[in-house]
Image 1 (tube, rainbow, N blue to C red):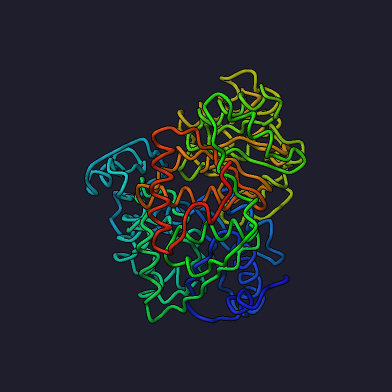
Image 2 (image 1 turned 120 degrees about the vertical axis):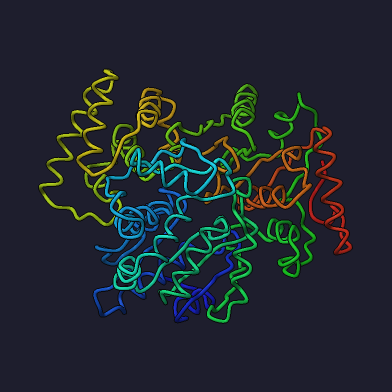
Length: 500
């Protein structure tokens, strides 16, 4: 893998490492290089865990790794806590009353930890707290580790390193769990994140926890700030949104790559037409799905053909069976997604053996040939889940059927084929486009969360950023608050972009 000096330093640094990786700096590329390097150097039976927030991110890491990962865990945060700690060691920590096959249903809500435990004992189901800022799964996993010596010995014997992506989105309980792994169990951690890209404060994400690790003596802190995605003007703009990166600002005289477009709610699409290049990839990003879809329709009416990429129903499934519904949907929608891809997506590093392949082909054939018969379809999906050792909640099955029954949802699985897309800022994270169109009114810049969302949207752009200013109340707030931020550096909005 081709690496910059700072990326090579990260790969070569031993022990606990925390990396601050700004947008466009190649963090996934660097993480994959480090995993490959350390798996190749490893000479004993122990393996690694690579932990992400989404199935998509875990799949990307798997796809990029050029080394043998059999036995290693590559999956989501919740899957790691459930599969590696809760399911195998709940009985050891809390007694034989919890000797049961556990399923998950995060729609089941409760106030207290003991209520959650009682629900497991009675219904064999993991739920979640009513308070979205609290995390029952990781609180339970941590308590199990503290109570069960067997659980601690298991993790110590199995893993020599755990790699955690997007750490800025960890909540306080998740952070406590991971720090316990290294402080008490002495398992090395590689943490990468960017507090400027924290989009989940509303559900308990705590970027302060990420920053606090910088000063831990047991960690080496390395900063990645060189943006390989965006041009210098867009880098300047995004860097000035936060004090810690403001020093990277460099004076630019050519300001043609960022345009603040003065317009009205009725003529904005026509004005974009004058500044937009149809030959370059582009994205229109809004904070709400309904706004992204409405804008896509308006652009289409004005001859700018954008494909609205919807959020799919199964994206709301967050339990340990979520990967299964994603895999089934891809198998149905995508000709390029085979039974081998399905096997590769099974958590816990399941190997490709002929018996498993035959069984999966049997179930998947039944599912795909009968997807017009809802009752039969749901039964066969449930049978497949049971075969693979997973539970199937009725509401999740319904979400899957809703997904595969609507042809337009297929576009979410093959969106790369569309040059011009309309979607939410959240959906765009991890993507890049030559041109990005955003609306000033979506980013009033009143608080940290507004700045984080704005930063993510802006840094999707490689060569051009168009900010639509319809002179609404919230668009005015955007300009006022941006001006206040730039005053710290004796700069004005006009120093960073063109106003048209």
